Image 1 (tube, rainbow, N blue to C red):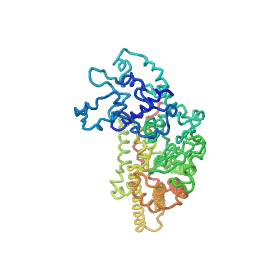
Image 2 (image 1 turned 30 degrees about the vertical axis):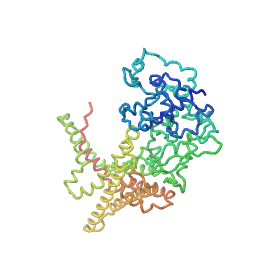
Image 3 (image 1 turned 90 degrees about the vertical axis):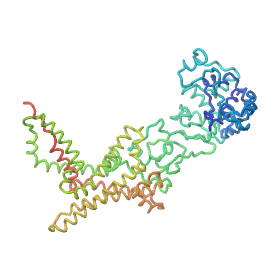
Image 4 (image 1 turned 120 degrees about the vertical axis):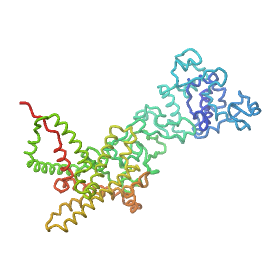
Length: 580
């Protein structure tokens, strides 16, 4: 490797001093075009970068040092000998100069590879302009940069990159990164089997796509990019809302183990001495082996040992769920519900056949009556179905108690449906994941509040039924008490499951806004058995809800469905008579 290559590698160390107050961070790559247009663009690399050890360049032991460790003021003073003049004048540019230290570190303000001419009539190079304009700042349009001198070519082969994400740039990045990471004898860098790495899904990608900032000093401070910058987040059916705090790498990468940090599940690389890292391989998620990294008995990650299924279509009444039939509870409950509902509709429909026949004849003025009927339908939907206006006119007390159940239920259904639609069709919208995330402050608070209101409504309604029974003749049916008692059990079990979830997963940002769940979770905060037992409580809640749904068509609560349907049918526009 020639001294030019050494020069360019060290130049990045020097430019690294710009990472704080300077104009650009210290990159190991220089933009060949902007460097060519800079004040140093006609210098040889070796003019500034001298004394590099060819045998140890690049030296992996140096990549985690700070750029200041490599800077020598004499490097700039060899050509720029104006320090004494600046001291005498007390100013350099727009900077007040009192001591030599004020301007001794030139790189605080000047980027040596991009510094444009200062003063005079110099025309500045602007990389944001199209090529025809930015190149014309100095000369006629050129199609390529001048070929570097022989001494610089080897340096340029690694450090000089073309503007934008070109194939040459990607090759240069790959070459420099794997100078260390494909060599098992260069600790402490993790090393990879280069041939095997090329066969991975990301084996042809630019390393800096996933590791932004890694081509600068200090190397260890480079952070991995979010996978969601390129990939779409899993929908609720695959990953469920519980995985919003799980980083993609924890499930998808090979050679890692999950670790809990600040309420999130992250991935830690597991290295075997003498073996190449496989961290860039992707796990086969067709089986549950990757899931078992977290979902195993006694884990300290806050994951249930058993893996509950995705919430099915019936859960959409209260939660952000899926349109799937993912488990036997949902299937059985839905079949029984539809059978009971069909039976109820047949019984009620047989008695209303003559009325429906009579109402389907428009008579005179059918068009105008049809328009009026549509308006009446809209008014019925808004006033009588959504606002429960008819019930309010009959009894404000009954309307209030009924509304404590009805309005929170409608709110949760609308919220869950919006979350389902947004997360599947508009995943790039940040609000989609607010709707899905149970730990978000807004979601946590509103769902906790709505659940409490529903529970309060059920308790008040049961108290009213008990009082009515005490003043009614004996023998009155107890079905309504059974209906309400079952509803209360579903709500109470839901609060219990939420509290156990918070206790199992630990403190998460925003979860405290689920005030009831947090209080319940505090009772079990030290329970080591939760990871093994949580699924039993989850299934208990699901079974209670399945029983409630299956029983609903046979209960007095069926009016929650039939009453709005009857009101809408009564207000529906008349059918047009057929021809003939």
